[in-house]
Each structure stands twice: as C-alpha cells, then as structure tokens.
Image (cartoon, rainbow, N blue to C red; front, top):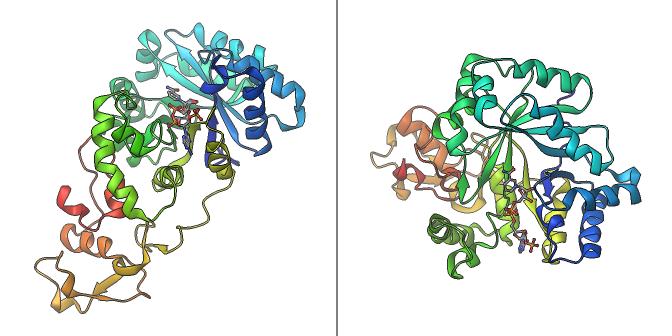
Length: 359
Ligand SMILES: NC(=O)c1ccc[n+]([C@@H]2O[C@H](COP(=O)([O-])OP(=O)(O)OC[C@H]3O[C@@H](n4cnc5c(N)ncnc54)[C@H](OP(=O)(O)O)[C@@H]3O)[C@@H](O)[C@H]2O)c1
C-alpha cells in the first residue's frame, strides 16, 4: 500500500505569508501560483490570517494544479476535531486534504496519550476522506503525550509521523520523544526550513532573532555553514533537514523576498546527491567534503591511540567510509549515540570531523 507520504516534495511551501496583509493580495496570489506551478506540497492553517481565502482563490483559478496539503487540526477535545478540519476545507473549496497536523492540548492530548476514544474519531475522519493521514505536532513542552502514545503502541496504523521545528538552529522535540521516534523509525516533517532567515542576519542584526538562544546558535552555526562549501543558506538548510534519514520534507515560508522564491521552489524534487566536491559516506550516508575526510586506518595493528591524530590516516578514496565513521566505530564500537541536548547535533556529524569530542 502506498504511504501517505508518497510523492511528497522535499520542500513544502508554508503559507503564513499568504495571510500577511502588508503584502498586496495580488502578490500573495502570484506567490501561491508560483508554488503550485512548482508542484510543491503546501502547509496551511486557519490561524494564518486570510491565507486560506487566498489559496481558495488560487485553487479556483487553477483547479488542475491544486496541491497536496497539510492543515493544522485538533485542539482541546474530541468534538473540535471535525470542525477544525471543516473550517479549513470550506474556504479552500476542497472535500479533503492529504494530512492533518494534530495539535493536541488539554483533555484531547491526555486521551491521545492513553490510547482513548480520539483514535476512533481519527479513523472515522480518515474513512470519510477528510484527511488521508496524520502527523502529530510536537514542541519540547508538548512532547510527553506523544512519548506515552508511542510507548503504548496506540499510534500504530493511524498516526503516520511527527512534525516539529527541525532546522540548523532548532530541534523542537524533547530528547525522550526524539529517541522514541528514532527507535520506532517514525517519519518526520521538519519545520521552519531556514530557521527564520539568513544565518548572518540572525547572528548580526539586532532583534532579527526573536529569541536570544537563536542568535547564540547562529554564532555557532555560521562558521560551519561558511566552511561547508554550500553556496546558499537555504540549500544548506534543506540539506541539513534531509540529512536525517527519517525526514520526509521541510516546511518553509517565502512571501516577500522575491529572490527566495526560485531558491526554495526548486526543491520540488529530491536533492540529487551531495553538493559539488562532496560525497556520501557508505556507512552513514551523510555528505562530507570529498577531500580529506574519506580515509581509513593503514592497518588494524597501527590503530591510533589518539584517533584524532591525522598522521595515522591514509587517504583511500575507494573505501567510501569516512574518517568520522571509522573513528566512531573504533571509539564507541557502534554507531554514534544521540547527544543529550535539545539542540541538533547532526551539523557536527555532517561537517566536523571532531564531532565526537562534543558527545
Ligand atoms: N506550529 C506550526 O505548525 C508552525 C509554526 C511555525 C511555522 N510553521 C510553518 O512553517 C513555515 C515556515 O516557517 P517560518 O516562516 O517561521 O520559517 P522559515 O521557513 O525559516 O522562513 C522565514 C522567512 O525567511 C525568508 N526566507 C526564506 N528563504 C529565504 C531565502 N532564500 N533568502 C532570504 N530569505 C528567505 C522568508 O521571508 P519572506 O517571507 O519575506 O520571503 C521567510 O518568510 C510557515 O509558513 C508555516 O507553514 C508551522
């Protein structure tokens, strides 16, 4: 049976800016049509101002190009589930959408955590074709019900995955939920592709980062981006999201910066391998610079006591296993454990051979 994610585009167009009254409606319609032309999936919600009405108009104007949609649904109790879907479908002029993003609070979150009645309603709404499947939204402070639901096995066969901020500056699932997702191979939809904007603006422009930790994280990440050899922050971010094997897509916005549109919209197709000058490690499949990192130990007997010592490594382009993975296997005897932090560690794994020092 095809998965609910079949045909999903690596970049999903997030529609917050379509509801921004500061942008002329005509411009917003043009952006919506451009994203539809690109064949992207869309993410939208009733709380994004008049975004649904703009989309509804665009869909009437180009009915053959109506995209697959993720809409935010849920709230505090079972009775709100149906109405939360219908309040989106009506302005969109649609009978159903691809995915419901379950935003669960109050008694509904508790019911979900203990495998209660809400699962019957999830199934009914699906049977009626209002949604084809579900992803559950998570924040660090709303992760706990999902951990319980996963551990109880209640989500099997009805919940298709999880959706949360996952970008170079944020990983918005608690460590417990992150580990439960990894252990059960749950698909992820990453959100906020570029972390709010260009990393140098987040680092340098006062007030651009809306939280202090984002500015501090930008200070850490900007040099990694600069060393990466990847030409644009957007590409770096899309590749970052897709370096997690469970990630199916990343949701990002573009509304007013015309230059952003062609950059993000070209991600309607999967990344075609690592960027120029990079290659994929056979062991971990994460892109790394081809020069310097793809090495192996000259012989097992000469295994370095200090595995970081570069003089003990010889370049063997054919081996296909990168230095980082060989070190990880030698030092830990297994693949790397996840760092117990609420910030992403994957960047270090992709771009920094010394990553193991920070575990
Ligand atoms: N809880 C939730 O469900 C939730 C929460 C937050 C976000 N979201 C979803 O995720 C989407 C993205 O979130 P976001 O807007 O917070 O984060 P984002 O994707 O990081 O984008 C932030 C802004 O960065 C600008 N930008 C994007 N690409 C650029 C480029 N190549 N060059 C320069 N600027 C660029 C765009 O500005 P301009 O608009 O000015 O072009 C965009 O609005 C939202 O639209 C929404 O669908 C969902």
